[in-house]
Image (cartoon, rainbow, N blue to C red; front, side):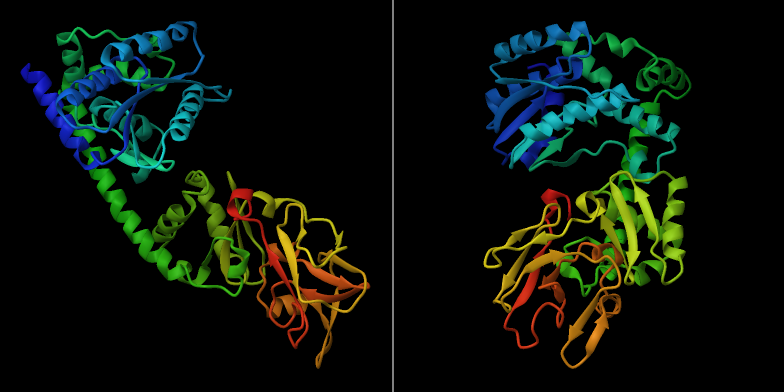
Length: 442
């Protein structure tokens, strides 16, 4: 076996060593040079090594005529190597960035195809990493963005791995030429209106005339930045642990943090902790938009400030900040008659309520707060509902959705609030279960 193949094969196998227990290694196979080399290397390793099952997946975007021939080419290559191929056709949504839309469609297909204990392998290499670093630098990215592409991350129930990140494009080209591999040429790769192509064809050749090791150095910087980001993540976890105290309304099942521990941190640590908390929920705001957090944090004590983000909003109430999305942001639900209180009542867009026990006979309905409601409490007389909600520290965003039980037109119970949710002797009480995360309320 040629020395170049031994070198690349050994390096690839070393990078994949922690993942030998996976049930499947699935190669993201575009048909281009990089993924063709990766597929060829793995197929030949499988002849001498005990590897997980190999499969390939080709995503057809349907964006250019030349691409219509690529699935057939990929099938031919996979047949020759004895690797099963899955072709997935996707619809790319129109938008400001065709590159981003295509990438989102492609990774959505990868996520759907990758199951638990499976590994998706992509063929990005060291030059791609350097291009990513410079591209994001031009966009003003922070440490997380400049850390560029991680070598490994979760993907749906499985994982994504980039085992070639330490290998240069030149090494892949030499391997492909030596083994007479064939691959498809994407015409769009020459279109310099795309930023990455401009960097690849215009900027990097000039840089490497002056600094021949530019690619290596930039990839090394990305690795340093990824390590720094890891430290920032650890710091965020420490700070979030201080703010992740229990609240009296944990039954709402809405993500929240205590405000006081966050407010004591420096501004930079606040942004770091909140970025870590928000990252799974919404795209991060740009630098200017972080002023929304400052306004929310510094608002008057009895104000109800809102910080609107791409996929939801942060609200401040009852000494905490709350992440709201989905139905929490829709109009309040409509009142409903409850004809059979022996059965749970589904509340459209608001979960369901259950009546445990049986109140006095009469007409039962679920309504919602409109203002001015009064509740008669044994031993306390008629009490204003607003004051009762204040005493129970119910956050402002939940008050318009909190189910109220009316019996014969009289307010008799407020769901889930001890002392207000039914009779004092416990003969009956009203329980509300808000919608779960998969339905938009978590």
